[in-house]
Length: 210
Image 1 (cartoon, one colour):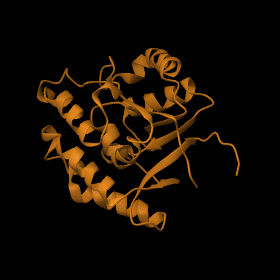
Image 2: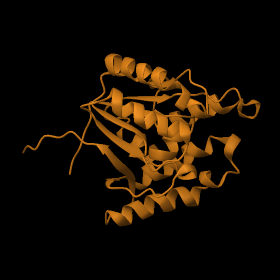
Image 3: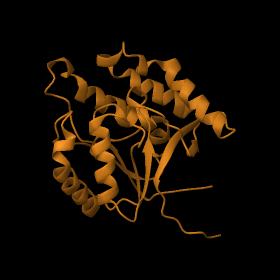
Image 4: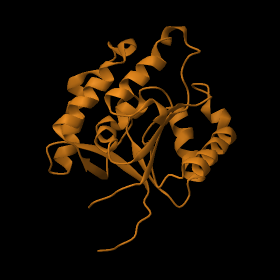
């Protein structure tokens, strides 16, 4: 199946979420379409994460996403469930201004409270639009992809390189290059392909045609 979006929106809670969840796909489609990557919290209230924003920009640059297509939101890490109405209004503004026709955000299998709140409010705000869920392995519980997208060796290598920009997290197991590649290999095996990025289907709006 071929799929396409003229305007593709990626929504993550924290710097690194989008790259961890779908960095290979992002590298693949960045030259082909108009996209916007929105990270809702910059995590700057944590004094140990002062370099995170610049690392995020560097990571997105590796994936071919220009600075003007990377946006940081005003929300506070770990208390997204208390900000649901603000999240909804923020998403409605994104819908009006960016007019996405395809959206990637956190999987339903994610147990992080911020990620859960984003998925719930995204499904409310973007009714009538296809929404696919990406997996962030550190907070995943029972994720199994039902939408598999083939990616190339170059896409995989760029995802690993993008994650290496996060020197703040260099010792975290979920930034390990072998783990990153093994997930792409596993999802590829599920699709009988060499490499794939995997998503769960939150909502698909389609039209059958020749």
